[in-house]
Length: 121
Image 1 (cartoon, helix red, strand yellow):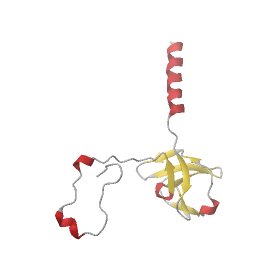
Image 2 (spheres, rainbow, N blue to C red; image 1 turned 30 degrees about the horizontal axis):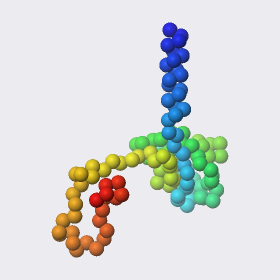
Image 3 (cartoon, rainbow, N blue to C red; image 1 turned 180 degrees about the horizontal axis):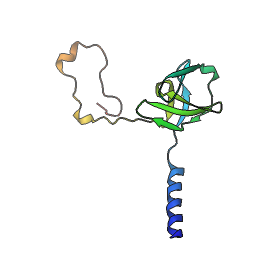
């Protein structure tokens, strides 16, 4: 019984150790909005005062699209649009074969139309 428990715990912790940890590599907004857990702004953080080293993400609130980090010894929430997170939290797969291509009626559009590098179309 104890051996089984030890093996299961070892497997659990080894997976957690190898899992990708997300971290904030850059602060994009100036100033960065510091939020509470409901997404209400608490204060502004000038980009010049933001950490220059990567900051580990502690939690991710997918519903509000917020990440929790520790800044100056305090746990705060940040909007994911204000920061660059690596590896990315949300990756959208495009069904390239099902996307419609430009039609002749689109010939008057002078912009660049495409699906991105991932689709090669």
